[in-house]
Length: 367
Ligand SMILES: [Zn+2]
Image: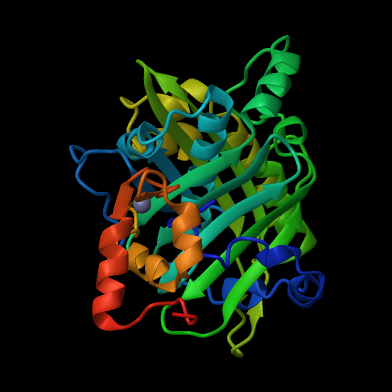
């Protein structure tokens, strides 16, 4: 098997090194979370006629100072999933991972790449989505076709639900979900990890926030097809730390009652409301929170983009030895496919060897 060009080696096995796990289990991400900065560009609502798709809309509830995000995805999911022929449950899980990664990344201040990744012993062994600070997102999954079919068959008796339940245990098994920030130009990466548990990815993420005692977080989200096309919608509400005036960050002083009431209002949003492209996110916010006084900030638009390119693949080929190349080739050709976007990269074995001989960089030291 060739190394896949989409996933750098660092993703694989990164959080199964037990010494490393212990080290980072102290939620290094806390450090970053405490630096959350809202992008406030005044309280003017964007023009009503802007396309309300593939967008993250920050907002604040004036009654309680709770902050949140609404996300609406359409074309981005179609593009990501259109590059694959994933079975329905896998496509659904990838769409959820992408939506969650975007929601979570939108609350962090970072220059670089935010990655949300699961790794488990179930039929879907890995889910990954990453988001650059400029809003480029991609996602993919690794799964075992046979085991997946078996799990799907067992679950077929159950009603499919677009939100809340995605049979995490059956599809993902036991494992972890990791949040990673690779900051541009920084050697150190920041990572938080939590066990896969609960019925859904949302449960895991909320468990992470509860366990790390950082920020009260509530998420509701739906993923599904409308008119044959994938769509996702979600809301995240957070009780974020505030500056106490002495330079220290303290937990938000939202009253328990305000928090509960807002969570109930958020929870009342239906799957259809989340997924209906005709309901503008501002209209949705007003519908849910009009009594709380809802204020919106500058929206952030996201797009699908993959960072694989010919240069990266050339580097992988350059690092492979003579025998490795021969083993990887089929009919004199080496073919690599990006796991994220399915882009194929092809190489001719003779050409590689000729070029190596010409530049004297043959990996075959015995020659
Ligand atoms: Zn790619």
